[in-house]
Image 1: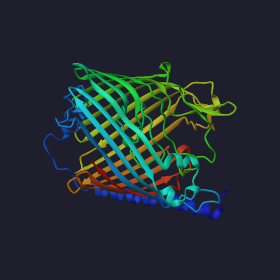
Image 2: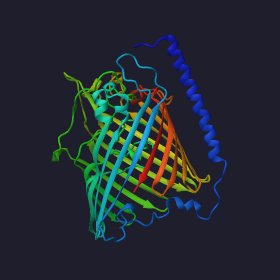
Image 3: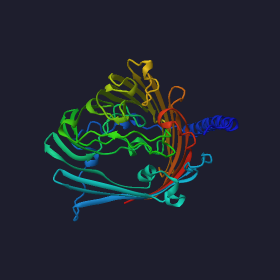
Image 4: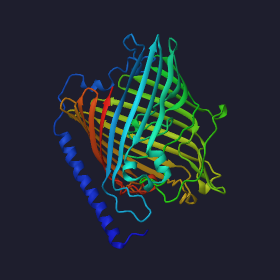
Length: 469
């Protein structure tokens, strides 16, 4: 339905007020976070990369566990989380009412870890149920929303890892492989898909979805070489039709998924060097693109095409500063409006992090994604390609009360004028005791093109209590 002129004017005024309020909040937070300088300590500038010289075949998480009578170490967490939407308008007849309670989710994750003589067998599973849909009335939601958001049971990571020789490791099974250095944007970190059903609520590190892979790591001096075969084809989980983050009024076309065959196995390689005060990684991959392409057929379908990627990532520590650089070049991108042409794209990211204030870290990252050979024929293609896509993120973290209270502020802008959307998230986490914590916060959204098209009314506050065991 078309908005009346009074509603449109009110919405424009609301957006201006929201931006102004967020700028005020930002400068207040910045002034509070930065008033106290960090106490000087000898060698403080070297602590950021402390331990980089201690290269070992296994990751730090693979340190052998103490011997126990019971050979399997069990752990996990249970949590209860709720979210409340406070910016939606009353819906039109027949539309879902997204005002008020949007989440009341109980979640359980269980992990089993068994280690013996240099080998590790790890498995984890997660399940959750969201009571909000039953409380609000299930009939008010689309089948797609109920299927994707009401409940879920999933096998998470499940792998066997061990040493084949003095400098050779094997890891096979469902796992997560993190590439790159950025905490906010994906440039070289392309192997694992993301759960993007509710963008902005959680950091990337908590959104990665594991894939079945076989990985070999070879170590020599300051360098390591990792060869990875990707056997499973999973792609980003996107908002479902009818959800308040879904960016269209119509359902997506049918999706064609690649068969799990030997010919379709993805391949990736990483060469990494770690040195005092800096490190660098070189990447190469031939995988299926997370971003789908609309196929101009009758009927229209969407597919995931093979792409080639070459990239590099590095970080350099200098005193209280950490500099981050990432670059990736992609070949084989296709778009519906010019389906017969392969396009190339180059992504460049630069970031800086400062930790010189007491218990405070401030970081800023900016990335530009340049589509080579951009032509006017691509305008209006359903994949929404642009010649240059500029994105920026500012993050402020501070801890109080002997690190029991953590405050975080994250500001993200998509597009040089935020024309592709924006997001601001403020979060506080308090550790009540060992293993027990409570967190809460608020997220503000601004609408834009693509995934953020209908996000402007999705502002919400949230709270969560979690117990790790």
